[in-house]
Length: 332
Picture 1 (tube, rainbow, N blue to C red):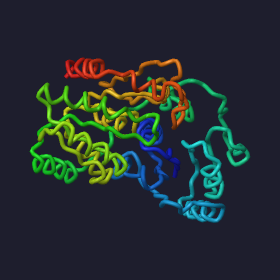
Picture 2: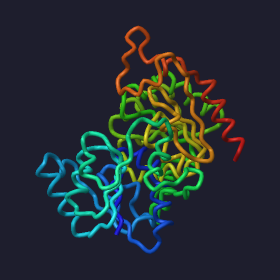
Picture 3: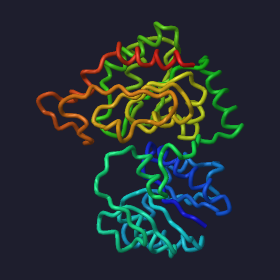
Picture 4: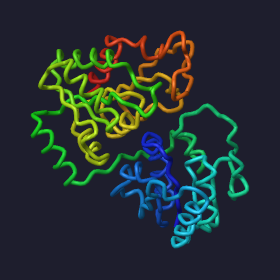
């Protein structure tokens, strides 16, 4: 059996799907085990790309004792190879404890002694998907495509949910992001929603509980029945199902933007601190708005520009965003 330790972020996990799909194609006779943290595991739920999904519950691998316990639990799978798509020392230790014959990953954090095949972590500016594929020596142009899998019941449930809200193929909007430096200002989102409504679109805002207050503020500001928020009210699997029913997406630099792009939606992502050359969503109908401010991409989670706070996001305009989205829609 081949093991794959998945990345710890939703967006990174979506960017790792071509790796999983290519690994599956190259090892059709082998079983594949995906090891994932509970908050990213829904990306792989019911996926035909993996045979088993080992979920690490929140805090279960905390400390040396927890990490040892999880690593030893993995021994039951008799792994021959274990690919590490996280660069942490913890996951290398888990792989070592699993007893896998081959443990393949990048160097760094003093973990090379725990691996049997080590790739240099010396910075090479490439897209993250390509970085994952380098572990199996595959060029991104030769990688297999992979779409998040939804079953019939999930699709039916999502459709029923939209019907109950009176929404038909709405535009998905994802106002939130895990990092402050990646969250566009509320005023910008207000302009985007106004442009969407004036163009005849209904809008569905999606995100986590931390995004609910901003979404509620936008609902009040717009005062339009065709603008609805379900932020904080759905599971990740339910959110994926709803995104799949939408006509397109405008996203912050977030995991949901990666999901929308993966599902084939025309998706425009707004990048501030993040570097689109490394983490732009991958898909056939995607675009990125990036202002290329003098201080970006800083890749910091909190803006350090005290004189011009969030310059990278505050200089974006609704007009540019809506124009980019319109160009993607023309390709439909």
